[in-house]
Image (cartoon, rainbow, N blue to C red; front, top):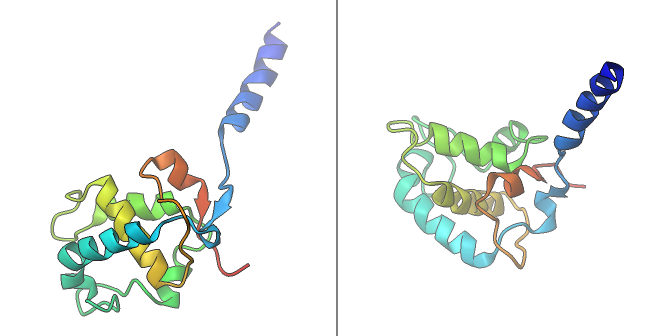
Length: 136
């Protein structure tokens, strides 16, 4: 009986780990969400990352290959978690998950990823299922 339990536990743990099943190329946010994200970015992020998203002396750009290269292979949830926990740099953790989700939709769109019919959900489980990847 112990032998079976030992074999079953690793199988259950492996089954609970889900890999991203969608990509940013699948249109994972809406145009309404981009508009909200742009407004939030302008008021909360632009002072450091610039109105044109190209950064300045205090912060890196969020629309360049350098930015994307650091996020390829990670999930949208990773990017949103980072934003929520680390931004703004002078007061990390002040942004809500919804603000970070909308801002991320705006930033992804500014990087050339397509708009879709539905909004990017604010739940981490949904966000973690979306992979940031280079063109197919």
